[in-house]
Image 1: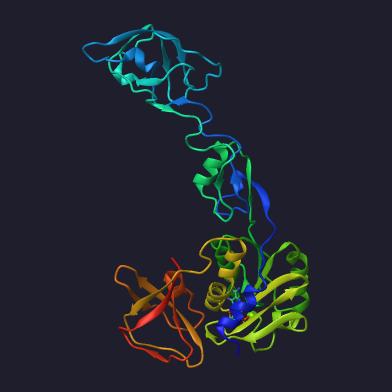
Image 2: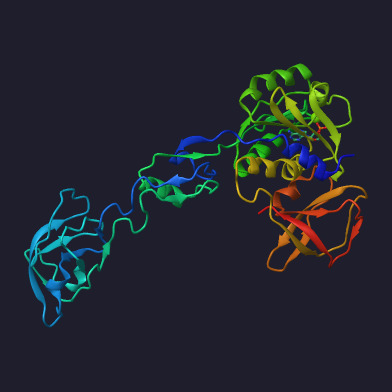
Length: 398
Ligand code: AMP
Ligand code: MG
């Protein structure tokens, strides 16, 4: 049997980054920058007012106060967006709004609150220090400087900065495109009536969501019955654009194992991994496209995705912390675990208390428990019992 670590290495070795692309700002959120970003212009681009008020020469209002206001003619009115270049002469005031260009010659802005707000002759009721309430050109960003580094993940604020610099796009590591394909003749799409012996198909929507949650793009192929020709046909028509194919079902030891039957003679290895759930696994390539074949039981499928696929997928997109956070918590109850297998139990982690409680039975069809768990407990191969009060390793899924 293959160890969990060995299979992680094999799967990770299949998944490679796509070449960088330039995308519109609106499409870049959450992706890693592939290049440093150099500012094409300075921010602010020009000296502008930080307040609504009056542009003046500080010396002209020296000594101004409530009791002894200085009166100045208001020669210009400068709303934000005025584009002509103005000059303020000694003895003048220009009414000015926040973000409007400060006229040449002005050395300070007096806030409207320190005036009578007049538009003909303004009473200035406070003195001003030179430079006051003027946002200087280049004080935030100097043209030519590196403002964002390759590897940084695009956040809303990164997009705001890029747009402020006049950029329309950024060069990023693109999302991995993952094709999800479920197999099983018993499967029926939700929304249609079930016949006896049929079940609703649940892996595709779950894994596609897990793929998106990992930061990648998911495409769901139509599920196929346990028929090699049908499976191959879907694979051939959908796998072309994918960077990774994930299948579920048809890889264990029974008959009608469609994925194994279709791919076993090619570049896909079907192996047993020493873990519970998720023992039957497969990985390899179809043509050049990596494929990971997960077991069909929904819990096995999602736990396998967590253990083998999520981290390399994130790493290939340059995303930080590809692995789930791991921590140690105190187990609240006694647990048993099979000898020779790494067990991943669903659990409920109480972060404040530092405790973890196993949630639901270990068997791999108990989706209900998985749906309300917030962590996986990882119990080593050589451990067969863990007593309440013992430290246990936890993967934080929240
Ligand atoms: P398999 O790996 O194909 O042997 O399937 C193992 C178990 O998982 C069986 O009980 C299947 O019915 C179930 N199963 C497989 N694929 C799916 C799926 N896409 N949605 C829900 N259950 C599934
Ligand atoms: Mg099956």
